Length: 210
Length: 201
Image (cartoon, rainbow over all chains, first blue to last red; front, top):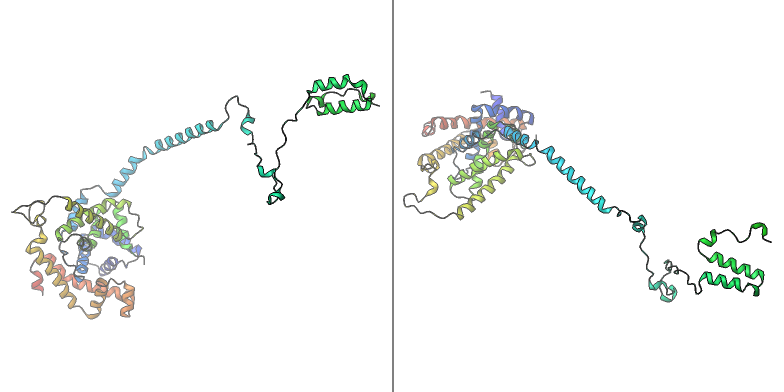
C-alpha cells in the first residue's frame, strides 16, 4: 500500500485533507475494498480510544446497511426517474395555472367595468361633501382655528313668480315706466334666465341701439 | 481547509449514485451513532437496529441533503428521531411473556441469539479494545500524545500543533504513523479472529 495514500486517508478521516484531494480519494475509497477496510479500522481505533461502553466494535452494522441499500436503486437513477416522471405534467400544470389566472382576471375586469347603457358620469360622480355644522359657527366664536371648508353653494334660486308671468307683467305695465327703467328691467330679467336667454339674439340689432 | 470536506465529497458521490461511498460514511460513523442511540435505549442490540434504520433513512433522504449543515449533524438528527419513535412504539406495544424466550431483544428475526449477546461477541469486542490499548501503550510518546489528542479530545491538527509546538505537517505524520502502528495489530485480530490478539500480545 502506498504510504502517501494511507497518510491522505488518515487526514481525510480527520477532515484535514484539502477538498480537491478529498474528491479524488473519495472516488478511490468507494471502489477499493482494502482501503475501505483500513478506513473502517481507523474508526474502530477511535471508538476503542474513546472507550465507548456498550458499543460493539466488531458489529456487522456496515455490512447490514450495505446489503439493504444494495437492493435499492442508486440515488442518481432514482432521483432522475422521479424528475422525468414529474417533467411530463409540469407544462400542463403551468398552462392550467396561466389559464386560471387569465379567467380570474377577465371576471374581475368585467365586474369592475360600468354596466352597459349606464352613463359613464354616474360612475364618476364625486361624493357630495357634507357641510359640518361647525362651519356655520364663526371660527373665532367657536374658539377653533380658521377653517378652510367652503360652505355649500345655495340650491337653485327660489323664484316666487314664474318667469313668463313676470315678463308679461312687465310688458303689460310698461306704459307706466320710463323707457330706460323698462329696458334695464327686461335686460336684467333676460340675463337672469338660465342658458337659453343668453344664447338668444338681442331684442334689437346693434344698429338700432341709441 | 474546509470542515466536513471529506464527508461532503463522499456524500456527493452517493448522490451521484455511488453506493460504495455510503459504506465509507457508515464505517466512519457507526460507533458514534450507536453510542448516541444508547442514550435512548439501554440494549446494545436494539441500539444497533435503530442505528441501522437511521442509516437507511439517511441514505433514502440523501437527495434532499444540500450540505447546509455538516453531514454528521444531519445524520445525528435522523438518528435521534428514529430512536425517539422506536421508544414510543415500543412503549405502546403490549408486553409479551414467553417463558422460553423472556428476553426477546436477545434474539434476531431467525430466533438466534444476537452476536453482541453471545460470549464470543463480547469477548471479541474486549479483545479489540485491549489490542488497541496495548498498541497505544507501545507507541512513542509523541505519537501517543498526537493520536490521543485527536481521538479522545477531538482537537484539530492545528490545535494539536499548537499544543505540541510543532508544524501541522508533523502532526499529520504522527497521527498517521500512530494509526498505522495500531492498525498492524488490529488487522491481526480482524483477520485471525478470536485468540490471535492474545498470541500477539
